[in-house]
Length: 349
Image (cartoon, rainbow, N blue to C red; front, side, top):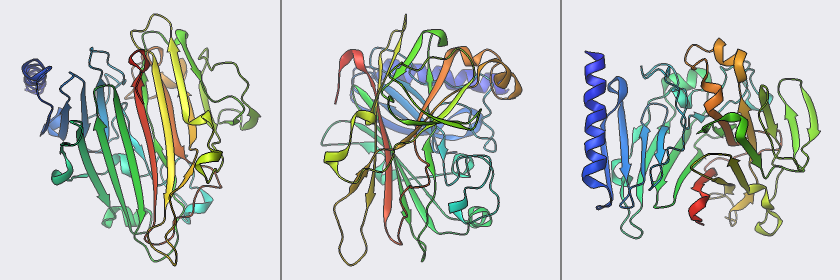
C-alpha cells in the first residue's frame, strides 16, 4: 500500500510539472511522503521547489532547465518524528551535540527542535507574488509545551521560501517574544547534490578562522578551494560586521564541480532587526558563520537514514549564527538568516 501511495504521489507531481511547465506560476498545499503536509512551488520558468511543514524542510529545488540542486537520502524518514535527512533542515536553537553555554540550559539534543517540529503554513502568505511572479511559501513556529520543556523561552520563527526563475531564496527570521534577552544558534543545514564528490571545489572562505570539529583545532583557511578527500567537518567564523560598508565577499560562496550540469553560487546574509527600544535603528548586517561538511565512508555507514554511498553524491554548505559573539536578541527584536542559491551558469543577483 505504501509503495502504491508513493507511486501515485510521484505520478501526480509529474503531471503537475508537465501540465504547468512554462505556464503560470503556481503554489499548492498537498500531501507528501508519509502523508506529511507539504507545499509545492512551480515557477512559470519551470523551476520547482517543495517544502515540508514537518521541520520546515525544503526537500527539492529544481532549476528551470531541470537540474536537481538538493540532495535527499534515499533512506530518509518521512514519519513526522525523525528529522528529514537532506534538503534544508532548520537548526534552532542549538547547533552542536552539547548545550551551548549561552543558551542557559544544561543539555539539549544536537541541532535543537525546529527540524523535528510541525510548522504552521501561513496560507495568506503562501502564494504567487503579484509584484514579481515569484512563488512564496511562508511557515511559522512558535513556542509550545514541547519546546518549553527543552528551552524555556517564547519565540516566533518565520521561514520564507521564495522561488524565482533563476534562484531559490530561504530566509529564517527569529523573533524574541520573551521578557529577557536570548542568544540562540541557528543554521540552514543545506545538503547539495553532486555527480561526484571528488570533483567538488568550494571557494569563498579564504582567510576565515576555521574550527575543525574532528580535531578540535583552529586554523586560518588559505586560498586553496576546499575539496573532500576524507571526512570534513569545519565551522568558518563569520565574525561580526555591523555596517554594509564593512561586509566583505565572504557572503558569496561558489562551488565548482567537474562534469556537473550546474555551477553553484550561494549568497549568504544576516541582519539584526531592532523593532522595539528607545531608538529603532536600521538593520545591522553581519556575515554568517558557515559549516562545511561531508561524512565520508565510515560516518555515512554509521547513520541509519544515510545511504552508505550517499557521501559520494552530496556535500553541505550551511550558513549559520553560531559563534560566541553572535547577536543577543533583546525582547521584541529579531535576527534574520538568509541564503540565495543560484545556478550560476545563468547569472542572477
